[in-house]
Image (spheres, rainbow, N blue to C red):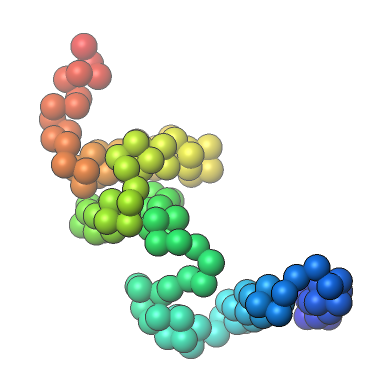
Length: 137
C-alpha cells in the first residue's frame, strides 16, 4: 500500500493533469485496492451483479472484453448469445467479434477458441452446419 500511495502523491504533485484526472487516478487505485482485498461490496457499488459498469471503457469495448472472458472460461451457448447480442448492440461488427477470437488465441489457446467458434457463429446467426462443409472442401 505504501508504493501505491507514493505513486499517487508523485502523480498528483507533477502538475500535469487536471483535478478530474487526479480524481480518476485515485478512483481506479481505490477500485484496484478493493478488488485486491476481495471486497465483495465492490460489484454492488459499481452497478451490481452481471451489469457492473466501468468508469473508463466504452460500452463496445466492455462487451468485447466480456466476450473474451467468456472464451477464456469456456462459456455456455446461451452466454455467448447474450454477450454477442450485447456487443452487436454496442456497435461491434461480426468482423470485430471474429478478430476477438483471433486476438485471444495466443492467450487462451486453440482448444478454447475452437470450442468458442461455433458458439459465436451461432450467436451471430450463422448455421454451423453450413460452415463445416465449406471448410472440408
